[in-house]
Image (cartoon, rainbow, N blue to C red; front, side):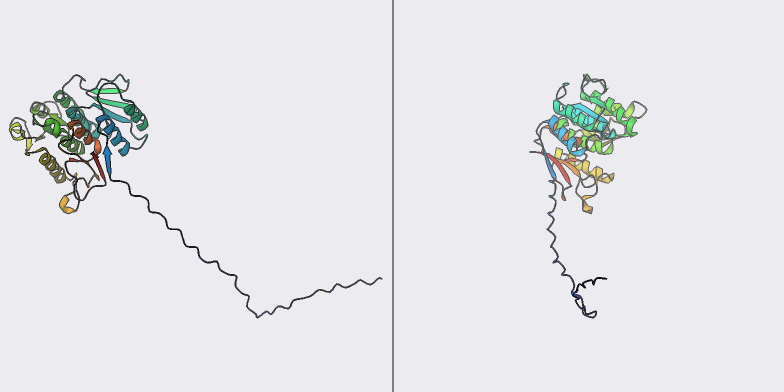
Length: 304
């Protein structure tokens, strides 16, 4: 048999005792610093137009597609005051309109919210889904009686606010409407409407808080009338905030919370602000004041 050539193989001797050098460990890579998310600006400056301001408040407060109902009201200080608690008991945005013709911004906002039901106050809108409260031709006092019946039926309340001051009624509308919306109480316009609300119907008001310089005199003729007199509009707003704190709606400022702390929201304006814009602030979900409380709440709605 022919010989087979042997192939020489070199063997490398391995010392079984010698340690195996560890693989190099990569240097740790420092985490890149995560940029802090910018804090949202607490103050939202609203446009000086009631309809545009109401849309801005709605867009800020409510997510798209979350509201089946909206309340549309004429851009009048007293009518907006009447409508604010209506929107509150329906948990609905309040949008202001200068005329019966819906501005495109309001139409777009209704569509964004996904609303199918439209409740109107002081307007005549040709929409199949529109549900008017009272007649669009009614004055604010008459509308307040109709709206009060609606609010009482929805909320079961037996209390109300009334603006008794004839001279400063429109300026008072914003602070009063905001307080009424927070408490789900109707707003009566004038002493006569307050008397009607306190004497007529199954759900008549047992207590009516009367606001304005005429509050004491008006309370004498309104059953259950409770006057909240104050010499100025600013003092009236502060008096209303005190009432809300006493009712537990707002936390006490002495306990380390501002006037809007319980809701985290406040509307702030000046006495020179147009009364219609003041009333528009009533839809903000907090009180309407004439100075920013200390400490300031998380959200402040105001005008330039």
